[in-house]
Image (cartoon, rainbow, N blue to C red; front, side):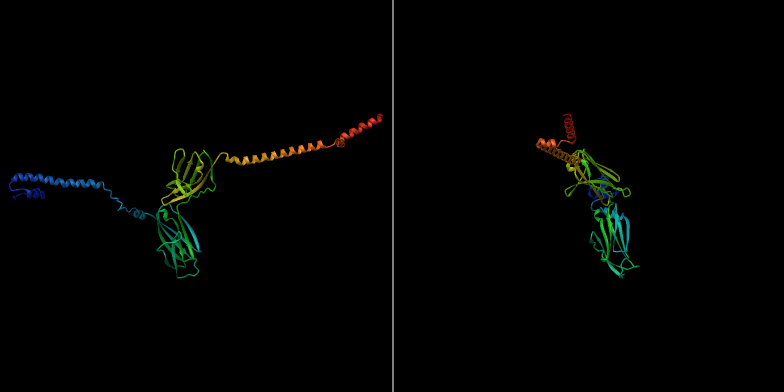
Length: 343
């Protein structure tokens, strides 16, 4: 190998390693310069290509997503406390969004005043694991606290703190309830239309949206908008469902649901479809009874009249004379006396 002036760094050295001694130095330097340029362009092109590819890479992959953990750290913290003096108490708690909930129970009604008692928590009547413990008597009362993460509708329900078997406090967790309940059914007619309303009190949180369901046997079927049949209008705390061209199949129970982040609050109403002749049935019944009664009276009068006429025809003439009216009898007697005087 010949001598080589390294003016281009490592790339020039790489070129010199593959050159032969027969090449002239000038030519070797020129070719070395060309080779250095090409060798630097290739890494530069790869770097640019890597940068372009990285811009299109989605870093939020399924494996690295930790959305639930971020959500739980951002939840509000709510504390509900109840002091019990008797044997049991029920507290209703309405939630419309996920929360970190701390339930605190204080019992002051124990007459035995034991130094410590056994306590535990239940959900919907079932004991919650790892909640059994012993609490000490402090200031003439027993206090029990427990933290719960309420993030979905499955977390709602009846939570109870139980002091041995002597006292219990129930916390009923539920979405905001629809207070308006319709006991009587809505009645409409075949071929007509009907509008069913459902609303939440404006003092409660506004629902995110509303849903409608119709009961078909044991299933609830989602009601979706359909031209000339179903129209749904949601307005904040209120919703209405309009059903057109009613048929017998539209009769049944309809459920409206106020949808919140934590769950759905449901109310129902019954719809009855009848024909236009249905309201006339009581009147027609009364009219038929009147017609029957009048007919019976007329028949009785007619039969009684025929019977009297028959009896009069069967009476003898002598009897008929004796049975003359009093006025006619006096007149007959007067005429007889006048004849006798003239004679």
